[in-house]
Image 1 (cartoon, helix red, strand yellow):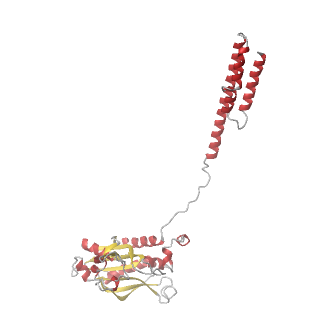
Image 2 (tube, rainbow, N blue to C red):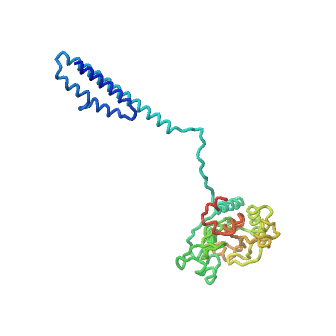
Image 3 (spheres, rainbow, N blue to C red):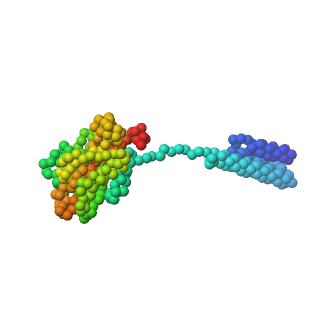
Amino acid sequence: MNELKKKLAEIQAQAEKKINEDGIDPEKVRIEYLGKKGDLTAVLRSMGSLSPEERPQIGQLANKVRAAIEAAIEARKQHLKASQLEHRLMSEKLDVTMPGERFEIGHRHPLTKIRRELEDIFLGLGFSIAEGPEVEYDYYNFQALNIPPNHPARDTQDTFYITDSVLLRSQTSPVQVRVMEKQKPPIRIISPGRVYRADDVDATHSPLFHQLEGLVVDRGITMGDLKGVLELFAKNTFGEGTRIRFRPHHFPFTEPSAEVDVSCFACGGKGCRLCKGEGWIEILGAGMVHPKVLSGCGIDPNEYSGFAFGFGIERVAMLKYHIDDMRLLYENDMRFLSQF
């Protein structure tokens, strides 16, 4: 009996020591000492050699040892759980005093930036924005604009035809025709958008580019009104000191027609590399809407008159930002785009 008591005391001491060792799984200790093949179970099986008076004493002592080991195991589990939680809290804590990570903020593409600036200028002058399809009928792109069937602009070398009567629009002027067909004067619109022409890609040409065209139709509209609008556009875009000049030209859908230059905003008209020493930079085409175009849209040219103008948005961007190659606007090189 004394040997069993001594053995039970040793089992309890060994188990409690092992439970508190680093890296030991308490559950493995429980199996080692309290499992079916454990040390304590082996002692209990040897109780058959004891007298009936000794068995209750050893049984009570064995139960106390079992309870002590189980309590030590549970305490160790709770300690490990608390340690794991503390480690997790320390590793996942957020220091609100630390500066946050800086993220690069995107910005508008230079073409989008220029387009919106131009739209704001004309919206401030009372214009509204009109849009139309990029896949257009030959009628709206050419015929309704007084461009005859044998005109060079209709040639397949210049225009992307889908069928004989459907094409990718080569200008945003068809939008003006569509508006005049549906809306009675007064009309005051701009039509910005993508256009397509069969040009080879180089520093100043692209098969896809952007235009902004304007149209005003009302009673008593004159070239003086056109000049006033374009002067305001030039001053707001290139600076208050900018001047404009008209040079006679020919467009099938306007009569009279003119090409419009702005005074060089880099040299003030004295002559420099930007303006090629001339002091002037060609910027757009304009004129009074041809009477045939008005009558074709159901507007009486004897009662109403109007003016139209149009220019390339890429050209404005290149002039304003001193860009010498249009391809830079389409290549998406971040070294270039980040400058804007």
